[in-house]
Length: 563
Ligand code: HEM
Image 1 (tube, rainbow, N blue to C red):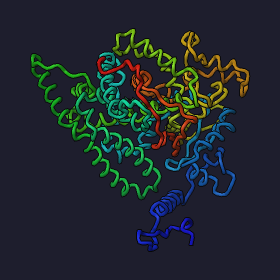
Image 2: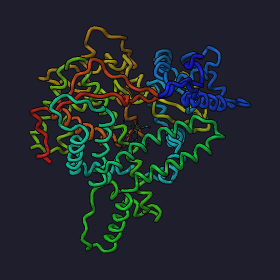
Image 3: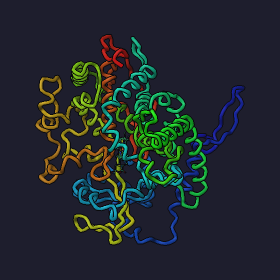
Image 4: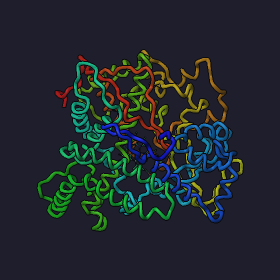
């Protein structure tokens, strides 16, 4: 019997005897498929089912069980399905349906209708419940009060921008130590994992601002933070994928596991937060008590909580809020960094962009006397563009910005299409980024695409969006309507409008510092081809096995003496 076609495999032990073993992976696959099938068993049709039937689905929609087959295909082939739907429907300003394995059906909104639809008030178009559903917050976060009252997120728009200048020194110090630890200073070529090393360095550097020095260097804490991110994403997927009647049982296991991970993350943090709470309260009671409040997210969260009910001054809850800031920030930022490195150093030789970038970093660094601050980082225009261009060409997400129609009367969009209440909508983020009518030569990485002609004057690489558009082979004609789409809707890795990512300036600041350090201190070997991404559902991330080869530069000028 050929084991590759059965659940039972024949394997040989060290003494040469054969045994039959059950392949765990196959059993799991069958189990998941059965559960999945049960999820779609319906006894009667809901009013929304009628809506889904009217609108086209890309992929094998006309074949038997088209919806279920497209749903299964969405696990590994969302990109192909969305690309097909975008070509056929979005480019004609029409909607299409995209099934997802875990969260059911979504209506994909074409770019020209984003502004009107996403601009609807919260009472008509809800974003909060879509976010809760995506991560199955009642199981993964548990304390929903934190999300209903997310005052920790205000730190990103209130205190952080005010203090970023002085806090940059600490971030720089931490990422310098991080590179010494995770990349070291090899004099000959050495392989380092592109993403996981970036993640550890970003986590250390960002937590210098969230929780201060010391704990941000605790290796177990950093590992626990990484696990927490994976736990929330993976649990959200599993719970969303199973039928409703299994959710309480699986949810219970997820809750227990989540408590365990939070304990690991918060273990070293809680004494710090408790001590800080005590000191701050003492300071409020006795204003002459000699104590200078540290500038970090713990302190800002405590200060914001102090005017609220007592339950918000709880060390565990404040720690949990810090954990959520980490959840929103470290994976996304490190993915942007790892992708930029791979996009910039792919394709046999440099287009001159790497040398231009290195020159820019050294020039600004020298101009500011070897001390990075907010102003200096803002002057890294070429680097800013190189990161944005990577976020465009290597989108983290195929589809994004899920919302649910709340308006009891539904919403009517262009071409008199009526979307009833309860239906979820989504944006084809990657297809917009790669649309030849919105970006010239969209599948190519051009580091300075987002620069002005002035910014690339005198540089080796002068390719900006406008010079790319002048090149002779336009793939499609620019329609009047599409060329008038505001740039906010052509480049959307951080979302747009009311819910645009509040951490985007901080993320770019951090990514620029990190990449400036790489460019000034290391050579990176060019890769013949851009390494492939791992695609799962709507997400595209670097493979764990993707390594880059690095070597310390002889003329590295950013060294610990500047710290
Ligand atoms: C390259 C890095 C990042 C990317 C690509 C990114 C992307 C996004 C996107 C697409 C959204 C959803 C917007 C929407 O639904 O309309 C979002 C929301 C959010 N992000 Fe980021 N983000 C990044 C870094 C950060 C950082 C560093 C922080 C915090 C320090 C952060 C905090 C948040 C928060 C709190 C929200 C929720 C906003 C809301 O619901 O109104 N993000 N981000």
